Image (tube, rainbow, N blue to C red; front, side, top):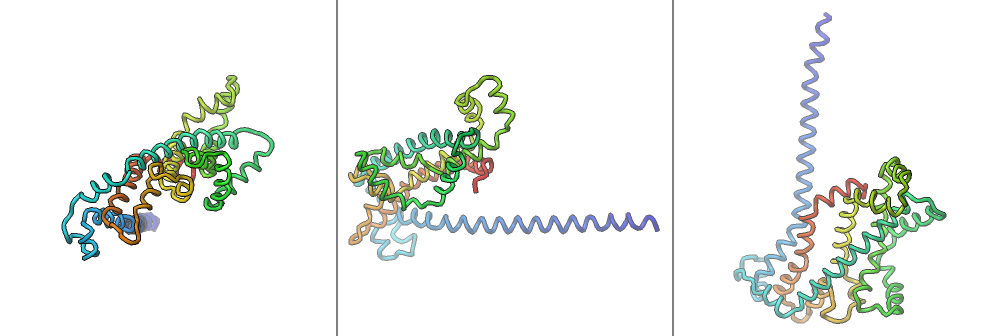
Length: 293
């Protein structure tokens, strides 16, 4: 009698383990199916734009839903590069995005450091304003920013596009969340050694905040590269425009050249795909470390 209970318990354990394993496998398969569907939703427009850019305008007009009609060629890419100032647009977007990344990482990291580790009057009020800035739409700032930069005579310059991106509440929040996770004994040990707060920020906190720096840098680069409304209002000359604004000027309602427009669009978002593919690990690590949702 006493030996039956252990035997029954041993017989039930594999069944429970098998049920748990089947449930985990089913959940993993469901996740794979969902991720595949979302990937296809994103991939189909990209593939369609790529195929359209390789076709001729006549075949697109005659058979728009047939991807193989008329054959494929790179004529649209050579035509778009030779007839549109894509090189200037690329250079403008690259310079603006790079400057925005440098200034945003520098200033937002210092702001996040101060809000996380320093004690000063009104810190909670400043943090509340930063959180409130997360809920403020960008379009609501267009008019006051335009008036401000017009009074400073900065319209039509790179600074009119770089400076607004520096005050990024989400970047301050990312650095604030990361710096709050640094162990307090590490900061106290640096203070006991006589290090100033600037020394602690530059030599202690910033070197170990690479995930947060990578996250803010990548998100700032992508948002600056994709910005459309503000560069459209600020930049007036054709050669000083960015890639999104320049691509919008290619669409002529009376005579739409589908292949050339699609080829220009593909050339426009290829840098973003390259940035994401190269730095995707840093994005995931930064999001996981800082707790960004």
